[in-house]
Amino acid sequence: MKTCFKRVDYDLSNLLHYLDIGDIGLPDIQRPFVWSNAKVRDLFDSMYRGFPVGYFLFWENAQTNGAKQIGVGDKVHSAPSRLIVDGQQRLTSLYAVFRGKRVLDEDYRERKIEIAFCPRTGAFEVADAAIRRDPEWIPNISELWASGNSSFKMVKGFLKTLTAKVELSEEEEELISHNLDRLFDLQKYPFTALEIAATVDEEQVADIFVRINSEGVKLNQADFILTLLSVFWDAGRAELEQFCRNSRQPPALGSPPSPFNHFIEPDPDQMLRVSVALGFSRGRLKSVYQVLRGKDLDNGEFSADRRDAQFEVLRQAQAKVLDLTCWHQFLSALVGAGYRSGEMISSQNALLYAYAIYLIGRTQCKVPEHQLQKVIGRWFFFASLTGRYTSSPESVMDGDLNRLRGVSDAAQFMAILDELMSSQLTGDFWTTTLPAALNSSSARNPELFAYVAAQNRLNAPVLFSHKKVSDLLDPSLKTKKKALERHHLFPRAWLQGEGQEDLKVINQMANYALLEWPDNIDISDDPPAVYVPQIRPRFSENEWARMHELHALPDSWECMAYDDFLVARRKLMADIVRRGFETLR
Image (cartoon, rainbow, N blue to C red; front, side, top):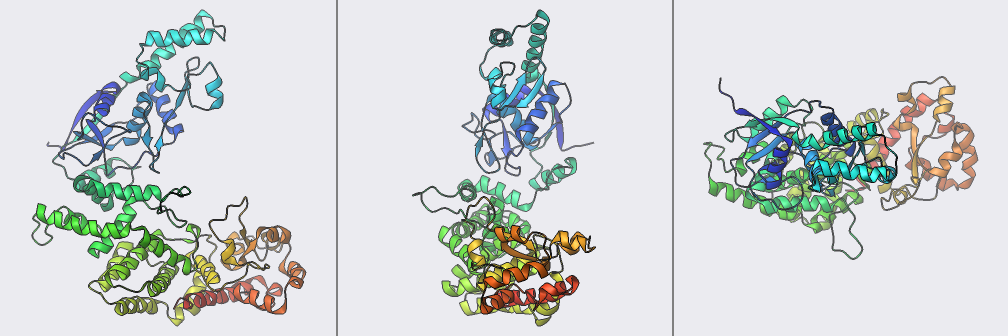
């Protein structure tokens, strides 16, 4: 029987050597280092006890570049001969601890892992301040191997330090010596690796990974396109990663502009999707992967010239996608539509695809910015409200891009988007579909976020307050308590006292309103028939009426039966959403 892999046995010291010289590398289809220090501690504990900790899956590398190295720093071999497909987290953990090396975590930050060991008990722990002060512990076992000392010197040195502070019996010294020798000998721990042949392509490797690793995240087309970027356009991959890294931290005072924002911390594959949509007018990535490899989709032949030409298309698209002026102008369109932060974003797909459509309008159709801001704000409001990119997002985006393919006129661009929106946002949607969708207790419902966005558009005051909803949703406000809290209009305790035990009914969206937290505390568990008359004198007749109107509260709602209130308020909430959306025309 012919197989596409072979079995190879290693001990840990050999694996570490191959990592040191760069002979084993991390392929771009794998994820960053995401294990917690506690999980690394558990790995060392299992190895120390002699338990099996799994095998590795390597892939022989036929390429001369396109793979990342584990750790930070230069390697002897610039191109590894074996890539890690399965076992990256374990091998990175071992390398980081045995070599005392920093690794890059999922937020692109350098991170050092420190695992402590108690020779008297054989226990491992994540190092903390108390452990670092305790002479019974070696606070960072990396120092044992990094020092280059023999196990004899290491044992002798530890016992000398400990006996200066603690009296030890001969039996205790022997136990400590034995446990330290066992720890030191972990570098001889045996591993087995299955090595896949270099002739196996990326799709097959991904299929193998999924089949053998039940806990693995399925590798997708974006992973493979990022791999191609590393092989044929490493600078482009680096630009993507730098953009995403910078989006996670606010820039220091006086530093240049950055992609940091309050809506999304994008990953490279997400920004890649935007570039593919803009450059190739495709939502599906599968065919783009083949195109970027230089494949003619008609005859199946590969061509280096074709590959280079397609990468040039991607280069030009990515330059626009990562342009900070475009990025921030697009995000300002979301603010203009009433959305203030990531807490109001139910679908990152809706945001990213709206950005692609914004760029098409800006660069391809030359829509004036003041018009583009409104139409994109309206498009995002619509896409988020209707969950347009929730089910089969790539297929839906493909359809939208097909409608815009070849369009170069601003008026036609806006007409197509308006037609797509009006075909779904019919009269029945506002009067029947939306009120039914509001019959939910979900705290992250797109209809609820659209309702709050509409209140922002309509300059609604906070309920029972003279402040604006939009002001207190400002993401730049950093307070110990949230300025606004979701409050039960009919309090939970009171409803339960009335015999209503179903939390899905009690926590209906229609039973919530945004209040300032002091008011929320003051209202406590009083029914609305009690607390509303106490609050009413604070406001004029016009203020009271406007507040009730913009919070979708029926007349004399405080005296209504709870079930009747929910039905009536859902209809009014739907109307607020409609009114907010129409302000974007």
